[in-house]
Length: 184
Image (cartoon, rainbow, N blue to C red; front, side):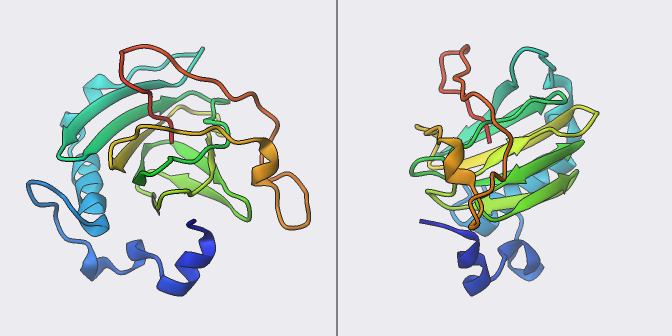
């Protein structure tokens, strides 16, 4: 199971820029998936015209698929959040395209502004929220494609001293489009 301690041991790949190469035709490594997310983020013409905002639920759109991976575009109006969850057997890259999102894990709260990226392995539990006053847009790359996203009880995101690190919220399942929705 991945944790922030894994990053303390191995280091954060996003801080080792010489390892981040442009993605090939079919990305296969974490560095290449990070590169894919960065290249899509940099080319607003690929995603800007697709973004929609929905006050009742987070909006999402599958932007691209490739051999074993999916790329999703999400929008978040103020107050919307994913609820605590993990990504089953999928690894991922979360990239903030516009606005500000807050990521909460068991031990950490991070404010992610436009351009920020997070990389995670299977079993990584977190909650993503828009606690700002402006809408946000994010890009999510999953490998393998997201087939499950177990929602977790709030107690899974409590700090070591037992205090909650995320506000109480109800887990929900989004519908539409036929494909399993991606959250964060």
